[in-house]
Length: 123
Length: 112
Image (cartoon, rainbow over all chains, first blue to last red; front, side):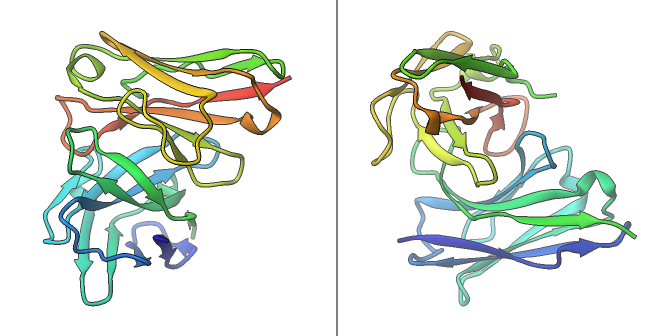
């Protein structure tokens, strides 16, 4: 079955860039029925959209993070990635990658989630 | 602070029925065709629980049901079980925000 796995450094220094990769297995990233997203969850708090990207590279970002976020997709590796720049302590969160079903009307449901990876911003 | 308002917590005894509300406005739930719900067990990733207002993915018990009316939506759980203890999130679309959607703040369900 489809699986998503986040990878990346667990510790990031303030003002630097957080870089995460999501590897998709058990299915192709190139389906036009899906896009690929990132959601984060600060410790003890709720869920926050970061953004999503299609396999063609068309991306949509949370307006509150747009100036610091870049997403990309590598279809040859069945991976997509997140770069979040100029991080601060408030960016400490569990970061989830996810698959969104986009063949219907919005809001697009998230039908598969990665297990999540904790990224801590600390000097 | 989310544009979708959920009660921070609800509780119920085993076997009882509980409901969780998700209140929005004309720019989100009122303008959206659908609301989805997710269940997050402690220490786990969220899982799709209800999609398209009242549809259950394969494997989700029929004790869980959803509804949407106007600018609000609700999740109902009947025959409450201890394994239902989790945090529940609603998701909608907001016309004033770009991106795939917005989440409610989450409701923690305690089974007494």
